Image (cartoon, rainbow, N blue to C red; front, side, top):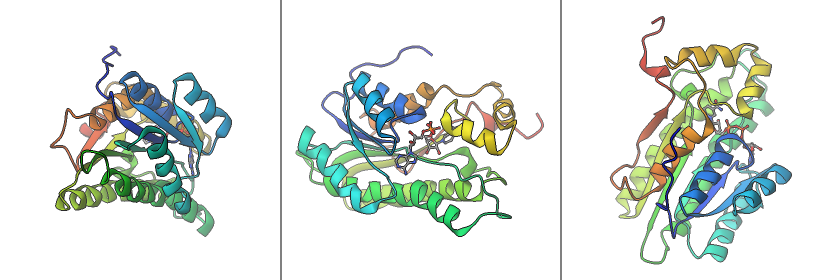
Length: 260
Ligand SMILES: NC(=O)c1ccc[n+]([C@@H]2O[C@H](COP(=O)([O-])OP(=O)(O)OC[C@H]3O[C@@H](n4cnc5c(N)ncnc54)[C@H](O)[C@@H]3O)[C@@H](O)[C@H]2O)c1
């Protein structure tokens, strides 16, 4: 894809969860290229540290489902960089269990990471963003999935958690607006993207990668950089009236009548 990066995010400070791989890694790279300071977090310390080092970002170990850790992560970004402007709630996992075989621990874990982690991130970020020098401001981008609109029978927890993220984002967006905060919250809805999570889903459902690629009329998977471009747009000041919105980055997969 053409390089549309530029210093659109100069002076801004971002937190990106799940930075070690896939869409999170591409987002760290893109936000740094656009001029933002970035604190990347992940449970995978070795890969997260390496990725952040490569792009001049700071790294912190974090399991996003640990609600007690979130205020520390936000405090670190503010202590080091002076403010918080952008939160990308990207960390996520698949569970690979249908309603026929999901057990309580599997359900609880995928909801804790994908949905509760996103809520805890929003809550902690807003507490800091409302006190930003110059007034309450910021942009939160939550990563959902096309499975929130057309769910996977083979993964009930993943699909349900990503559906929850869509509605969570709208509640956060409208509450912030009602408080008079210039804090926006939007959702990016990726379709099938060439990352590790799809490799894991392929192990549960062999043939899934080729099948989902063929659902896009473009007949291919997304490059993570293409998703990061949408995230960078929502993070920027180019869309101040966009809040509670959803950006589909799915190569048209959900825009075509089944069978055509
Ligand atoms: N790849 C796709 O096709 C696709 C499609 C739709 C949505 N998404 C979403 O995009 C986001 C990024 O996924 P990806 O495709 O880049 O996958 P990925 O597996 O390449 O990256 C996910 C990252 O999140 C980290 N992570 C997992 N659990 C964590 C936790 N509890 N705390 C902190 N970090 C954790 C992993 O270590 C990994 O670095 C996810 O929310 C995923 O659901 C992906």
